[in-house]
Image 1 (cartoon, rainbow, N blue to C red):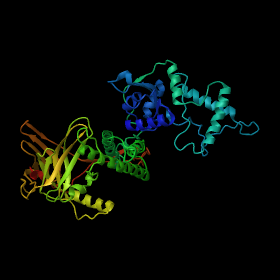
Image 2: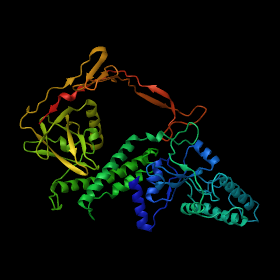
Image 3: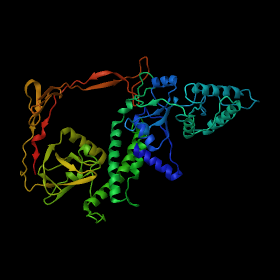
Image 4: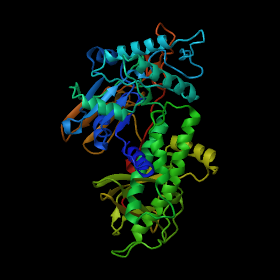
Length: 539
């Protein structure tokens, strides 16, 4: 969200030489306290407005005249990062009777006295009544009407023709003053009153617009798209850093396309997963296009950094680094290639975080005669894990279906090793063939044997984990070193969605989570596992 806000504000500044003063977040499904300070006061906003808050909270705030508040979302920053915030009385729509789309039923303003449907007085009275009604739940004499909603202004002339007439005749009437305005003008008017405002310090979650309609379904809608956006956000951070380290080029690959795609994906009907399928496909396609360009940038930048000498600059790198974005289906052609004698695989690992990372690296390989060394030539302890049949099946399906490649060359193992990477830096590891088979210390795969009471045990040394063979559940944990001995009760459950056919017609779906009870998952087959810890390679 910070990247998206930065991108949008830079565009407005460059194109119009204007800096936004108001956050207009009218349709997201609830609002976190972070919106108040990090994406409100901290980005230079004077105010923040939104439409969706819980229906019970809204009614309470109407009575208390507290729809508008000073929102102090950060305990540590306190009043230094507070912001004036307002929720609308009825989502983000006009008052009832003031919808002027060509297919709406609201009476238009007829000011021709020669026609039988002349209604200026009635329309002015309706306008004043609606204004006074909102004024009775609002502090100060200033109120805001949002004249529009979803899918409106398809024919803008009908709106502005009627609004022009209403403003004209309402001001002649004189009971209230009406004008075209902006959130900034409205905010300035509020500030000028020197009114005291209630202080809010928490968030606006969860959001429900009526009973049994909590908008929490989107927390898990389209999890694959959510994961994709999350992965690309992390990749964008790393790519942008490498772009800076090498120096941005006026020609050639950059991170702009990925930045645009990620910004678009932050829409409240994008990463939330509430869009239709063809729209979700479009978001994913844009992310993919952005990734491809950023991938070229990352590869060339890493090659530049690896080959550069102290004070020598970059030049044209010789190394051709390839990346493996499909490791989630056990697919990485560079690491799967057969290593001939004298040939090595160079693995470069980049850390975009501001602190050192020690993490396990896992790449698919075909040979069991491999060894891993760090950049100084020191041997690194590694491990070979056989690919599970389920992993092989998933890989074969997607590789053949989407990449058009035969599944005959499936790798046999995962090669894993512990890598240590400095902050904002990279580490290099060398994977090579051993001089002859059998020089690495390894034993055979051992299937976990069933012990007493239908359970199995795994774990090295003092740490032991016990699982149920029949249900595959974790049942017992023991650590002789720390004298911990605990029984564990594990269960898997799922929710059945309500279909909305009861007395309250609200179905569970992409937006709203409404369960119809909680159900346990019963295991029908025995769990089978392999003790992979015996495949240890010391190089």
